[in-house]
Each structure stands twice: as structure tokens, then as C-alpha cells.
Amino acid sequence: MLLYALGGALAFSVGLTFAALVSRGRHWETALAAAFVCLLGATLAFTGGLFALQYRSYYAEWHEPAFTRTWASEFAFTVLAALYQFVVLGVRLYFPFGFAVLAAASIWFARRRR
Image 1 (cartoon, rainbow, N blue to C red):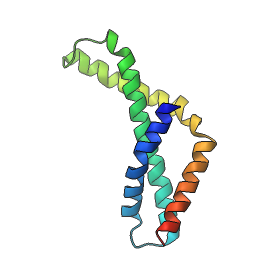
Image 2: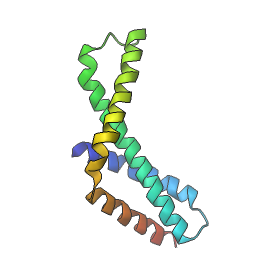
Image 3: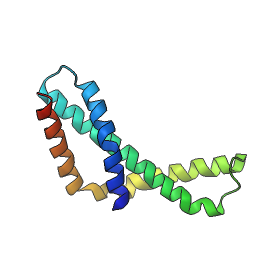
């Protein structure tokens, strides 16, 4: 739960910044859609990244010494496997409460931009 909260907290300012850049000078409907998409993308990216780092730290014990060719391969495939597992198993944990918070934050952003 802490991983998801931290991912959302880190993604909030980044998502709002990208939404502001995309919706600059446009109608509130565009600001709403931009906030929804940018906040969603940033939240998934940050939370997936944190999930991959935690996954990597668990399996680091069985990996080769750092910065070798084998280690680079193990690192890349561990992170890719973690991101795959996050997409398949972890994204569903956002529903229904995460989706409601995302919608509320997007509406708040669109109204603030008026």
C-alpha cells in the first residue's frame, strides 16, 4: 500500500505539470482530459518504477557482481519482468478507489484552470 501511495505522491506534480503544458490556452474539457491522461500515465510510470526497484532489490542477492555484462542482462530482464508483473497484477489494485481519486484530481485541475 505504501508503494502505491508513494508512487502516486511522486507522480502528482509531474502529471500536473505535463497536463498544464498540454492544455495551455484550451477549453476546460481539454484540461480535464489532459489531466486524466497525464496523471494516469505518470502514476503508472512512477509506481511501476518503484515496483521494479523493489523487485530488483529482492533478486540482487542472486545476481552477478555489479556492472558486468551478465549483471546488465540480469538487471534488464529483472526490471522488464517486474514491469510486466506490475501491469498484469498490480494495476488492478487501483480500482475502484484510485480511479475515483484520479477523476476527482482531474476535475479539480480542470476547474482550477478556468
